[in-house]
Length: 255
Image (tube, rainbow, N blue to C red; front, side, top):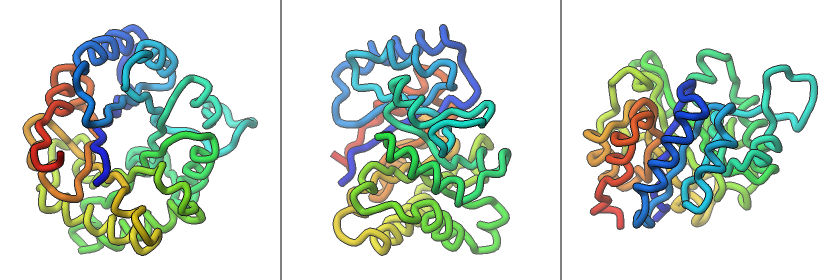
């Protein structure tokens, strides 16, 4: 069974000072929590400060995005090498907001995943359907396409460094959450498809996260499902007390 992962995606929130205060508080309050992984994804401007404040703890620091080229004339972009130089351990790739607002394609996401892995980063690869696609009964078709295109040419030896985050677009920042059953159906399909793509133990050991209006109130039901291995938390990760409640959820059925 994959080790549980709780990741906070801060999006375009928090200054450097606010980041330092949050990570300091998180570090102090996480003592004794050793049965799950925790990471936060601050904006680019706060990454190095977060890494420095997290020293001596098990807190991982993720970037929210990156470019697939190592260097070049790409104004406003950040490379994988820059992220590792800043001390990042993870990068989020393919978030629905990147796809929807910035027009990222499956091919571009695939290039980013390959570049991140080559640089030594662990990947949180986001996939998920829109409300229109769900209502048209296309959820599994969309998930399958995004998985196959996003992981194209990713070798078996690298898939262990990829976590998949299922985030139904209709639940991102809307207050709507997939029911535990809906989440489990999607996660089970993802694991089955990964098993087809990567035969053996790789699929069983892949960490599959749920993302989409995760809160302290719904984390218990989500995490009770057998194929939900953690959460990619948005708004609820901005408040330390709220995020700690999610992190400290009693994983009775998982450990």
